[in-house]
Figure 1 (cartoon, one colour):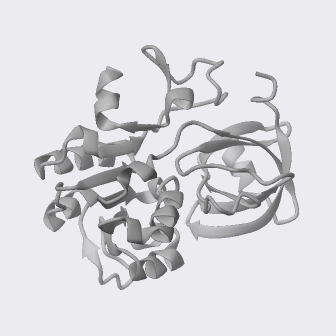
Figure 2 (tube, rainbow, N blue to C red):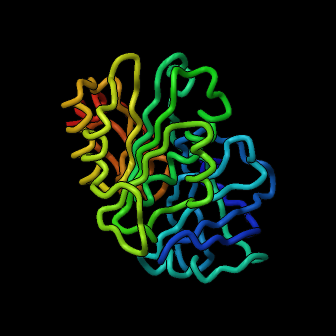
Length: 265
């Protein structure tokens, strides 16, 4: 277990302002870090604390690990003060991953809300790299306001390889796209469940109503994947913070099919 808890230094090479209160940090570990879409890391600042973040970079670029950080507390506020050239502690990757190989030949619907696009970003990279292996790719992504949409340049570039549908709860700043919460857009688009899977991540209320919308369209729980947004601390199943029944979200997840989540009670 000592190796699992070992923290290595990583240099901050780039800081990207994604949205108000949200920054993406590109970190350069001491050695390249291999990871799969859906896995997470823990980032620490000496003397301040440690937090869990989904890896949001391309899986083939393990020499640089990206994490998107929302300033919501003491540790994340301190991280937001980092500049390129400074260092943090980094450990991981941990957890399971999205079974992309199992989706070959199917249409994949990726559904995200707000910062919930972070763990889905490596999924999208992987899908687009292999887009000829799938029947089709769809992204439905939204945020409360236009300025809260993340990864804006990529949202545009992804349109060349997949059907991209962007929405906001409230149109401001000259927004001309869709208006409405993500589950409503899912319903309006009539996403087809035949030979398809759906991957959904975002605020808990969005996941709950997005799940309902997909079920109403005919999706079975076995066709729907998500990541559980539960409080994790140690990342390796020692602290018990994320224990549910006989499982630890950090070790048995964080990626689950909806039928597996039901079994957690």
